[in-house]
Length: 284
Ligand SMILES: C=C(O[C@@H]1C=C(C(=O)O)C=C[C@H]1O)C(=O)O
Image (tube, rainbow, N blue to C red):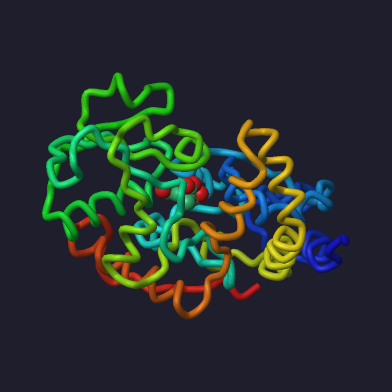
């Protein structure tokens, strides 16, 4: 299923600014299992789209520097940047437990004094601070956790890990806190981890439709994605299917937008984001 719209947009649109018309649309995306359904339908556009895989923390900068044209970015960065527009109806979200954003703690959560946060993340790092502060009245010392480290050798009391590594990490007797679940208990709202964005004012005709169709196709082929992810990550098909269908949610509608706005308010309250930002959608 080839999108005529995007092909037309590449040849018709004279407003692509720094993007050369003969060049492909460069789309930045996280390399985790959770993003696979969102890009499933893009595979058949290889002649007009280039996919670049990068950890979430690096994608906003790449978009800002025009190294990519569209990106799936950590939701906190949408509010910090202030110059992006969100592609409607699509998110990486959870309504409760997310299974891939977890604190692994060597002490009871209420006793955490130091926490090392995954450097791949931006949103879940902020969410950790919000939950530990808001729910547990804790302001621990924060350090970095790099995926080359392992939990046991980390000096911090607790470690935040996101993505495939969090799914694969064994609990090993650690106290674990699923931050999607913690957010739900704190607010009774869904949590939005990532959104597709473009720079505000950048017109890529057909983009919203292209990404929405891709998501729809991904959801239709979720079992096939679970099979290949199980192989790639060396984990069970059931774990993948459960994660892709029960834990991660891909909609960005009324409730998720409410969750996104609540997250922004909580971030502003502890100075993790500037005041006065609004949710603005891309309309092309
Ligand atoms: C739920 C997740 O969402 C991710 C978490 C992000 C973050 O913490 O900054 C960013 C993008 C998402 O892919 C996950 O990867 O586990």
